Length: 124
Image (cartoon, rainbow, N blue to C red; front, side):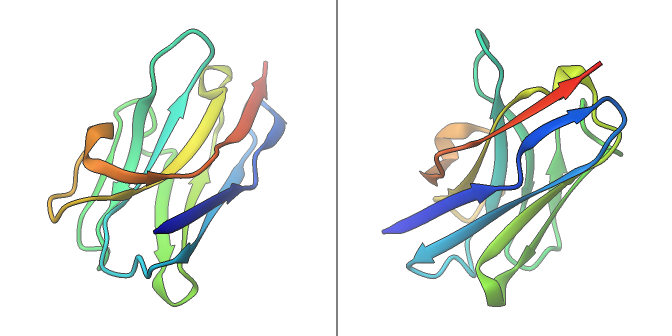
């Protein structure tokens, strides 16, 4: 079993930056793919970013490409999401997740463990 705890969310203004953290405990996640998703009120959960264990592959949603960066520190069992140039449409609950297979994926069904989420609110 893996437990994930996100932190770093908050209320910011348009153009500001935030860094989300996701700390994992329990079984090691060192060799697992990691992802970030988000869900805005009234909308489905959507993919944000993913990174494999070595960092040799990363995926981003088109809406965040060039503004968000996913990184991980396997020694600390922590994955990060650096979010720059935030926009009001980035407002959502952000979730980190651990992948359940070898293939880096954008689909939520490819992730086995999820955190409880952290709220990000961007005001205009």
